[in-house]
Amino acid sequence: MTIDLPPGRPFPDIELRDHAGNRRRLSELIGGDPVVLQFFRGWWCPKEQAFFRRLIALQDEAEVAYSRIVSVSVDPPAVSAAFRAGLGARWTFLSDTDRTAQAELGLRETTDTLNDPYVPAVFTLYPALTIHRAYDGYWFWGRPTTEDLRRDMREISTEIRADWAAPAA
Amino acid sequence: MTRCWLALLEAPATDATAQAQVHDADGCPAGWLAAWRQRAKPVRAARRVDDRIVDPDGEPASISLVVPPDGVRLAFDGLAVQHARRRVLAEPPQDALSTLMRDSSHFEGAITVARGMGVARLGDDPFARIFPARILRVSAGVMGAASAPAGPTIERYGSANPWPWDRFDTDAP
Image 1 (cartoon, each protein chain N blue to C red):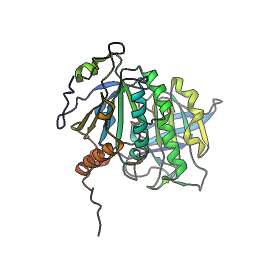
Image 2 (image 1 turned 30 degrees about the vertical axis):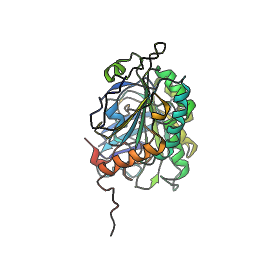
Image 3 (image 1 turned 120 degrees about the vertical axis):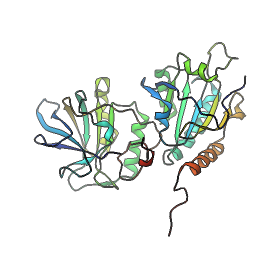
Image 4 (image 1 turned 90 degrees about the vertical axis):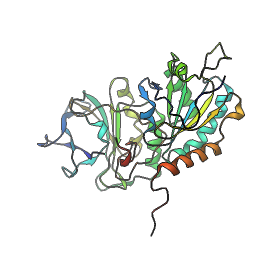
């Protein structure tokens, strides 16, 4: 399978339930900031648990850097809420339990017919939802490192913040 | 962003955008919670809030109102205030919340709005670990419901904007 969401293309403005069960639209969650948009198999996957430790490490920087993180899986909201709490994550988890966004995005992991999960993928997006970079995480080393994500957030911020160069005398 | 002010008054205001009577946990009258959408500060006790939490058509709600003692202020960027914001993001969302402020640098309280199952959790308001909280019952007509902060941002988008307002003014639609 090939992920057909390349850089430069607009990412679909999906609407799903968050970990509290409320409908949330991706564009609303992003606001005016750069975002790390992560699709993961589910709470049960050790590779996802390892990758989440990267995101948790990034969280303490993202919370002061005007950047967002959004995680999406087919886990129900209650499961996402429990997983999120256990991780110590403070960003929004979205639940695609009926797999409508998964079908729209073409991000179904076809090799797992038991769980029918998302194929692991990470996208860094501009606030207008344009894809900056796409990472296919089917193999763990395909996933972005925290350094990759820092670079992407810096590159997007450089472009979208009109005052990126500090005003000085 | 529209400036929005909130104050707990002894009597109803004549010029509020929205207001409703307030009772304490024993059912005793505790004043009027009034909100104004205007640039100028309407009354001495008013503090700025995130505009999204005010709704003239809002249903009755319970609130946790955290206000510092007279003469006491904390830096908005103080570690205790930062950590309370983190705790808010980590816990299940309530119907609405906003920090309170009068200037661009001080934390001067918070309001959390709860309905249904959330009311029981008002006693665990993270901001109540900083200053005392009053749990009050507000009638219909002032407090709305707002989407939970997306997280993980704990910074304000412009120092004059109460958290969790979530975008710079230049980003406003």
